[in-house]
Length: 499
Figure 1 (cartoon, helix red, strand yellow):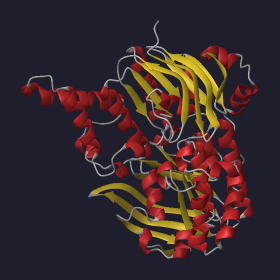
Figure 2 (cartoon, rainbow, N blue to C red):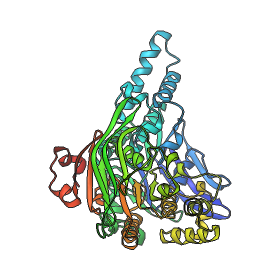
Figure 3 (tube, rainbow, N blue to C red):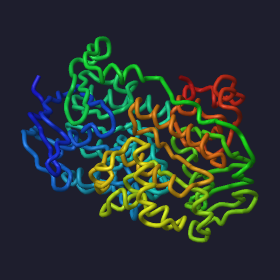
Figure 4 (tube, rainbow, N blue to C red):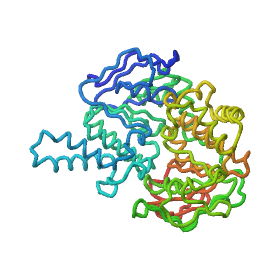
């Protein structure tokens, strides 16, 4: 079987330091080839090589070959490739119209509509105008990702590079994406899967390459790698599967944040109703639900990033202004938000360390030198070295940027820390370490409360309480183990919340 894409001895250097070193493999039609490894191991750089895309200033050697046909790319951070000024349906229509120009004029509109509906269906998205007329910021991270996948399908690519395609997806949608990628492979399209999710890789991959520090340390047929791993890093990854960090619930104090009769809207459409929700100091509240259920909208309301709502959000019993711009410096410090798309939250032209330290200067009035020292210490605690954080965001991996974004929020010394899918782009080992760090923070900072927006049940199980959202409604809340083992609502017992 002839390869539709091949990489030979790829080496990518930045500033004399190799970030990919001596990587070689083939991608075969109808097969799924998976690259797995820790954040920063070189997976995304290797995958983007098939599109001839490299980091700025990179020195590249080796051979990259793709046969005739487009290479589609589904990025880990879909918001970065969606135009914020255009409705998401507009680009789909542009792509479809370009593909049917060869048809008689009378047939073009119907043919374009059919192509769009087929792509949306395969990407697990409804074809209704309500969703197509939204702008990217009005979509959940999972919905954004599926729209980018629909674009790649519309383009008719013969190779699809799927970079963490199930990141930020609930279990039901994740299963649908797995089935969809399997269907794509059965149609003869080659899939290069870059993923931290070993369950997804196990379900899909024909061939597996394990990467660490830019090198392939182990490769072979998927079954061989799973059943008889040879490299110690592969063994460690598999051993960490299913493990979670220590429970972030140290103790429960007084109510620090309260939601009362909140109804949020996108334009005139109500997208979230939350009658009552409280968060106490020292506790971790996990907010779970399917993609598009309103989790991120709730988080944005709490943080002052979504002001189109009725009701109240109270900090220590005092209503917070709806708009971020109307909040005082103390209120901004008190409620900090770590975004799911960390890359979009950084200025691409400034070193990461400077941006992290700036938070302490701007919100707490800290001396710049002291802020820089505190930033270095916090970043180091999260596993990021001094040399790494001197770089600009474009030279860090998605997982490294997520941890940098967490460090930046922590330098505000928040009362409430909202983490939106911050573990979804991390490998099993790093995820466990990060949850351990969050648990330690709740012990050390007695006035801190943590809100985890997550699809991952292992992460949710480590919380002290869980709130469940479904189609914009708060349908259940209570102690984590009670919600997961003895749910009161029918929805919570569905496959979306079964291990």
